[in-house]
Image (tube, rainbow, N blue to C red):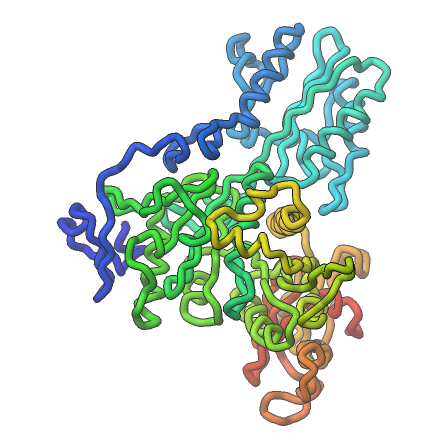
Length: 559
């Protein structure tokens, strides 16, 4: 089973038992003995609800739920996850695990429960544009025997939902407007959709990973690893279970940027790798293999990256962040083919030179059917001693990318000395100054990622495809266009609408094929794939790969 996914692991059982991993001419020696981790490290195989950070154990969620449920039981009524259970079963604690299998509650034959549901319909999810009842978030709803108290469970799409506190507040506010209600207890749980759910032969170590997010720049030195580390810490602070995979084996950055108590990867007797852990975030980097930077050819590097990613015991993660290396080479394609990447965050700087490389990266992700959900423009501004904001590298790279490919979010990160020194010292700024302005910007990035991933996983976005009965055109369906019914646009109008040349300020013309001929009226796409909620990846006969935003498709003439 291990060799099936990791052909670069040696098949010599004796070498595995001795802790030596052989990858062609590369040899990495690790420890085979499973260590008992210290107080600031959590076991990857444990399903405990506690989050270990530093030398303090926190029980931020499950125990709060238990205390609330016990208070409700002591108050004379029980909120149950199932109907028709025994009294002892009624006292079982409601957790994420035992509510996720329950059907959503959309209506009730009980008059008071129906009144509560009508009140909850006033709470609107800002991302889906739908109320929380129709979204299927209500999993448990109970009214006490006295008829004066209400208990309900809302199951969200992610534990890091940026509006969960607002859902809690509004739910209580609207339900308490009912004359007969004295008290409302709302319990928030989460059941994220797993990225590996549709991959039956997924590597065992990755089966608990819900979403995989690529952090990419396609150009070195723009602050990609800094963005990845600080975003990971921010998502963990938001309540998510997070991991980081450092895919840059030529120059791994994580050993410098974070300082875990135990900084060596461990291999167990079964050949699996135990990630190191820092502030509750699981981390795997070639830099923790004790070999420094890799010196090897491309195919060997791709195999090494594959082996490190697929044999690591990641456990249950809401988000696994891939710190991608610069460029658009073998490693990127390997990762895109080995694991289903949910979304990508693109990191750039204001210069036009950075835009040219990022443009290639966005196109690469489009070919892999990976939507880019945010652009982070580092070194965007700085505030002088006079209080004025300056743009030393100009303006435009990040904005041009967002406009060309309809990427929904642009975050401009200022030049901040503490951000650089935090990476050099091993303590990210989002941890050393969690309430500062830079941490607030990373919280914005985290909220963008969480929201966009939830929308992608909902499957409610627009679509585009080829229709075999109507050659030379695209079949497009957008909920707020044409009453939600499909409509058709010609392939030639889609090709001529390409905006990448104008964004790059080049002499390329969307009316001319790569062969030098003009775009014919009967031009037929070779393939079409929806990329997230914002764009379509179209491949043309001349080899051109186009990213066509739905914002543009909705304006084209319809057939």
